[in-house]
Image (cartoon, rainbow, N blue to C red):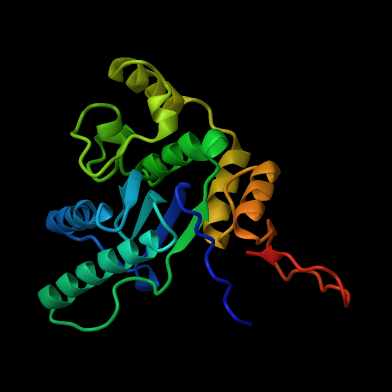
Length: 238
């Protein structure tokens, strides 16, 4: 069965995940992380992509990206992967791939899930029991969002900017949001949406994206989709 193409919608946020090949480590030394962030900063503007959040884990990355056009994310991810792979191969005297061949992505509904997706991304090191304070993890956007680090590659997303009229208010409210009790269905929706290439949003958001793209994206569970009767209209499922 042919692989479905990604859904990319210009100017909407996209949650992107890319893992190391066979879940191998892609960041080993400090300079591996620094090099990745340098590349992200260097090419995000060239390819017209805003970076709303990020977290670099040992064997995978989470990014929240908003492209100006439909090609920007693909070009940026290709450049990030290629540069990191060349460096690893040169340092280790090896050949071959470093990353999985295909990154995963999900278009995110801004008003309902953008801040929730930032929180999901920035709490990764806490869930992995690497740190207890998400802002202390050096390789995520959380420290910059809370004013502990320079913004670096980040553009403040509209939902974060709307949290208050000053940096102090925005940081305090986001800190509270980070430490709020998080509904399990929120985690599940964000996780499954990016893993399956579905939408991170409500049914109303599905209608909105269908109107823009001409593709109706149906959320599905695990397992095979049911067979359709002859003559039935087909929707795109992921």
